[in-house]
Image (tube, rainbow, N blue to C red; front, side, top):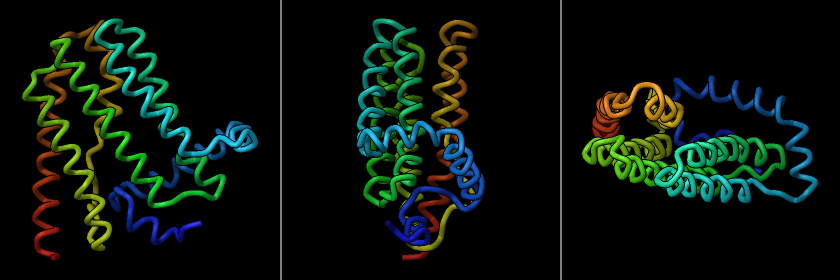
Length: 204
């Protein structure tokens, strides 16, 4: 099992969100303990859940084009699986840099796929989607590099769950609102990307 301090050096979390993240981890462990025990007994691993998360996320992007309710249902499954792979890894003692990186890469792949689907549905402008997908990935990458260099972000913007949750509002309550929300997120992400680049450049 990896050292917690070393694990922090390789993840993509900011200092300001780490205490909240750790509180959330303890809460999820308590709430999911019966499920985690069952999964572990059935030899289901965190990597299996990461694969399920990736597959359901990509399937959600594809299905959104043909059936919005089905796409949103699959996206919910993606979020649930994504929220369980970490707890299962810690429960089974298999948490690692490799697993964390794979989980992060899978999340980014789903973000890109969902943006492509939303552009196809004309729910988001191509420019907004491209900026969001690219800068989000850059910020996450910079966060990992900064943690490795010992200069973590003080806080980070992670709007993907906000965007996913807003999809129902976009499709059934307030059409056109998602594009505005994504541009707001883009401005925040761009600010973090610029500060991340500056801090890394100074450090190296």
